[in-house]
Image 1 (cartoon, helix red, strand yellow):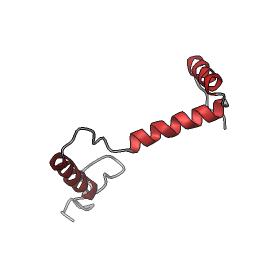
Image 2 (cartoon, one colour):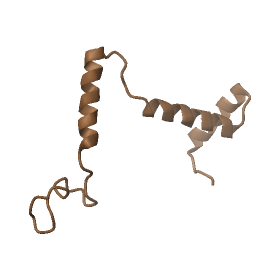
Image 3 (cartoon, rainbow, N blue to C red):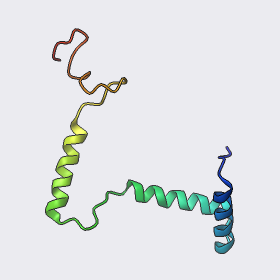
Image 4 (tube, rainbow, N blue to C red):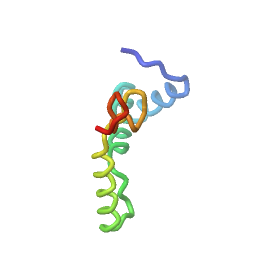
Length: 86
């Protein structure tokens, strides 16, 4: 399935493909895969072990929170349809 890209993106992809001797598909796939790996990796650079432990505790608490309802109301999971606590 084609993905529309700007003219600048196409020029950059073609230049990189020519430099690396790869296809445009290969350089785009590699660039997106690398960017995704960086985005998914936790940003722990420069943290002490104590700081990292604190971050991990905070993340665990956030992950334990109930999901937001479809309307984005954070209280929706706390109360039933009559407004009473669950």
